[in-house]
Length: 250
Image (cartoon, rainbow, N blue to C red):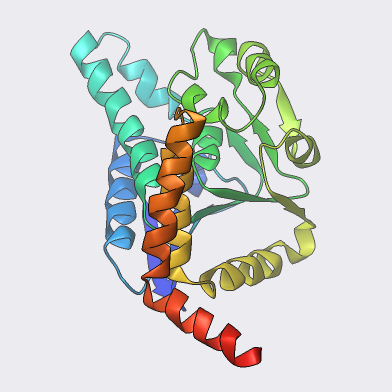
């Protein structure tokens, strides 16, 4: 279900159901959760790279599994929804940056999974969308993430029309960070995550934590959080070394 390896400070997590376009089922969600936890506790990891095996990133929930659960009770449905919500929380709280490398389609829950990453790199022919409305479903949990990534009207349009957009359109609306040509996508992704992994691990971790904790804060509270973050950063070994190197250049 999941391929996992760590090399050069980069934990590569690969959704591995190419025959099902990496559709999300309970087993894949469980092993993805375990992989995220594993990478979070590995001090050698500086960046997590999430991708999909085969031509697509992730096509969303496994509809065959949803069909089989049609007669399930409310507690069963809540349990299934909570398992995916737990993935999103793990990604948000992960101490390292998580980068999605999207080829092909990232749809519905698969698009939500990409959006839950801190950064998204896409191939030129990649496609993104939330087509749940077309089967009478709602991208409910994903909206908490999407609403923080694009403006309100764009989020409304994407979730109520089920529109599939290109990588270039996703870049324009701020849903993703970069688009690379298909032919050199892997090389560009590798270079990007290697550069990110070379940054101060403590500074990146503190930045991620502070940025997301500012959600919903008043301006004054956000500034106060920044004061504490500033003080903590000054005490790290990376900052001390960096300041020392800078001082020697003066």
